[in-house]
Image (cartoon, rainbow, N blue to C red; front, side, top):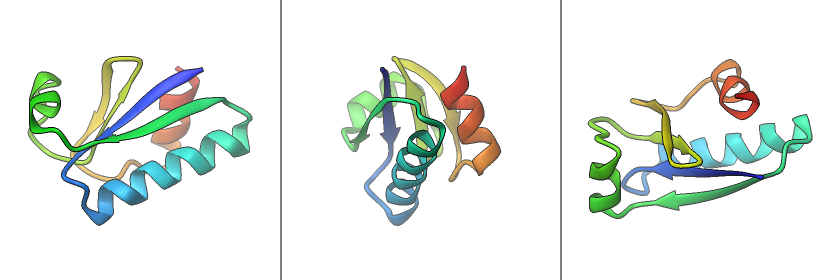
Length: 78
């Protein structure tokens, strides 16, 4: 199971990112645990300057906006 963190302030873009990752993973049959992280200290740990951002198993995979479907699939399949 992949542990995915959506890093951000809790804005609409962050919610959409989490929802799209969950939906895409379900469609691809990939088991994921998606959590939303709003703690500024954790976000700074990943050195994120622009949110939403996505970390997979503790590694930053995307930052700076809502990832498109192609990017989400790449993140999930990596």
